Amino acid sequence: MPLPPTEPPSDRPDPQPGGYVGSRPPTEPPSDTPTPRIEPPATDPPPGGYLGTQPPTEPPSDAPTPRIEPPATGPRPRGYVGSRPPTYDAEPTALPVADPDDLDDLVADTVLDGARYGACTLRAVSVRGDSARYRGEPRRDSLLTARFGTGEHALLLVAMATGARATPGAHRAAAEACHWIGRAVGRSHSRLVEDIRAGRRGDLKSGLHRLTDRSLGKLRASAAEQGVDPEEYAAGLRCLLLPADPECRTRVFFGVGPGGLFRLREGEWQDIEPQVTDIKGEPVLGFGSPPSETPEGDRLTMDLGIPTPPSPYEPAPEPPREPFRFRTSVARPGDTLLMCSSGLADPLRGEPELCEYLGDRWSRPEPPGLAAFLADSQVRVKGYADDRTAAAVWEA
Image 1 (spheres, rainbow, N blue to C red):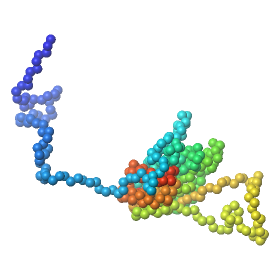
Image 2: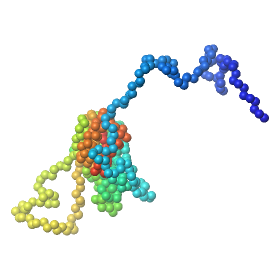
Image 3: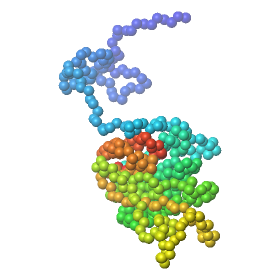
Image 4: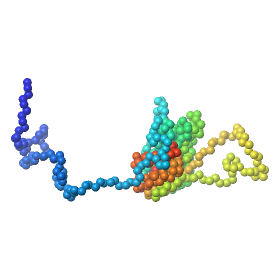
């Protein structure tokens, strides 16, 4: 059956006041004033027109609107510094080989973290080097950021470790070193906070030296359990302690192994890496140059280089260990403290253009965001392709 034709719209006026559409009437009572009909605005307003209920304060001008330029924020991020770009690609190329039965052993290419406590803002990053990215090797650097305690009694720890070069378990050794020192500091954080606040430098140095030796000793024990040479399953360790108390601006650095500790103050970089204390006293056998004669005046015979067999009654001597490094510093407002592994410390010491670039980027009043810090910390320099791990602290 065909449908009846649609009736044309009626010319009848709108419903009488008081009408409504829907299952329930509106909350407010109907008004006696007819509802005005809302006309849609014209698609293209006439020249000089406006949209809205009131005209703009100033009449429109015939002059073109000037273009608003963003304020200058310093140099733009750069991919590399130096006369030539590095040999390797800027982005990761190959992934490390994975074991389907040991996926926990995989290491991410990049780790990024940050926080703000008290008067300081922390940025931390660990990036796989260009060489490892190209060869499909895992990142040998490990990074740990942790907070122990709450409120003003909290203590921030930043630990970074670098495994031995050209060893298969370097990334595992670095991760273990960070975990061991993290557990040791976490269990002693209350005492450490008290010592930092009271300025007990001697107690801090001896206590942190003991915790470091104990942590690296456990790493050597882990190597023995795995049947690995302790020299191959080893790691350099560098740590930074930051109290969360805004009234305490003491920053504590300690660790073992190569790397860098820098301070950016008033736009100038300062290398504040603690130096190993010079050895004083007479030379001893096995260290330094031997004396030419005995105390009795007898001349010593020439050393023919024949090794002396070890005595069965004495334990075998341990290989020489890296010296313990320790430094406390009081931060000033506007300072930037940088602790980093050799992957960033070496180009900072060897390429002045990198120092100038990062000094300008990181000496601004506001610390960079995580993405900007990541971009800055991986500015490449030809000839430096190792992993880079860095932790920077901006003082408010």
